Length: 335
Image (tube, rainbow, N blue to C red):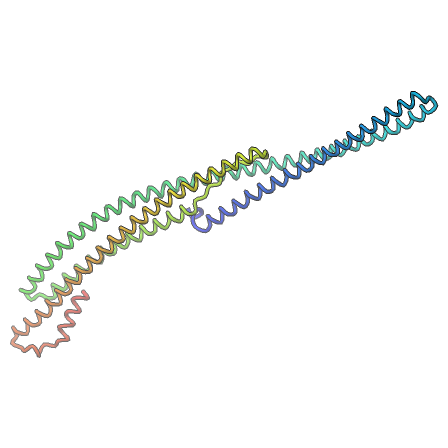
């Protein structure tokens, strides 16, 4: 999975594209060289044929002259034999050149077949990568569905937590009334501390779920943006190449549509994640409001308890250090 993610996957895709383009360019260059070689061979054959035609016409003229001039017949026969020998030598030399050119053409054909095998192997490797990419996309989609279900469970947990917090707040208010009657300020601060720890635990769970959703969204986005597929099976024929180019354009259009669909699905998941974050922020805000209300009630409880203690001990209010009352309120808020 590390091989198919991030910058390494993009570098691998770019290098693979460059290698395939280089192979196509090399194949085209070999085809152009072979075509030029065949054209030169056809030109040589045409020149040879014209030369043979000229020689044949000369021989026919010589035969006509020899039929009318018996004295020059032997000389003309010698010239004809010499010309024939020249023609044979020329034909032999051209045959040797043709054999050499044929061996070169056979070597080019073997090289082309080797390149075709390499291209076929690259195409098979690309198809295998595409299949793996499809499997990974399917796995991420399943994970996204699981995350959606988990978010529904988390919503239920948030509702249950809110209900439990409301119940605990009622219990805290009853406890505060009990503390007012029993003068047990320390026990009330301990209860407030327990409530704050419970709220922190809820906030921590919310943050963990949000981080997990963000990480999943990031991985899905990175994978979908790096998804690449390179089909194609090149052929030396121009018509076949044209058909392959048309098929490649169709495949590219299909891949673009699929990528657009995936981007739309990712955007939909992003909206759902944003909605979940908004709900989480609202829950946090409500929890902070309840927490602030509890802190204010505890502060008022501390001040009232200090005043009540001063009155019961027959001490004036000036004897009570206001800094102590404030510090007790601060300690309860810190708890």
